[in-house]
Image (cartoon, rainbow, N blue to C red; front, side):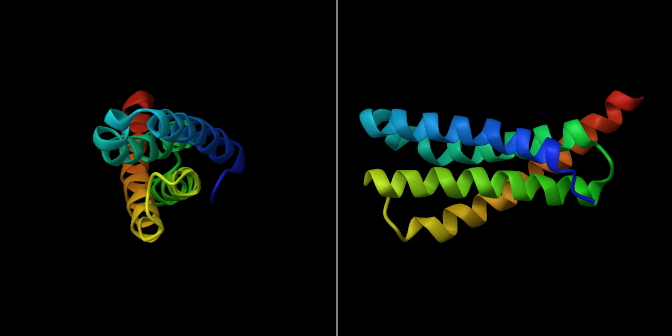
Length: 119
């Protein structure tokens, strides 16, 4: 059901982008104020999209794999932000939940793109 090689690749890409965003935000107040929310969600959705686009074997598995990839990279990125002192600890649960959700949505869009590519 879940293919681990594409999951690892998508999670790695999302994790590198999350770490870069939160590290940049640690030194830039503008990034912290204007990019953290939308940027974190977009990176998690992109990780889900990458998983489903690489795998492309059904809506449920794409949404599930996208949720896992987006959730993992989002959770680790938010945890890094908390460790750096840029975000409060209360944001971990809600941020991880949002990352899982947008990762699943990204997986659905990735499956749609994989279906269009197959045509």
